[in-house]
Image 1 (cartoon, rainbow, N blue to C red):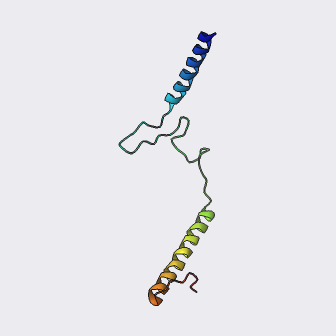
Image 2: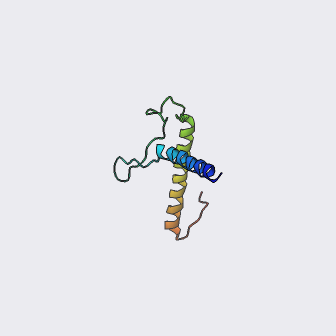
Image 3: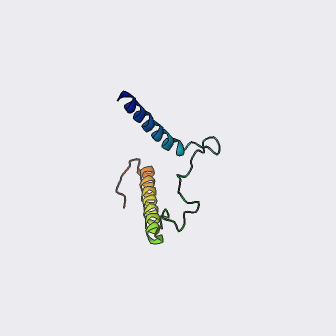
Length: 91
């Protein structure tokens, strides 16, 4: 009975180790560039199931929001330089 359990344990370890050896993510093209795609990941992403299909209108909203943030921050910094105190709500 001990031999059967030992044999099953060894077989389980070998099965897990073979799966781990299949993909380890450590094949480096150059030092510091060790990314590699998982098996089955397409070479071309556009048109595949991994394509994020970003909506240009949504991307534009984010860009406009960031520009508004930068404009508000510029007003806050200009006010702080002029008055010597930082005020969050500058209109």
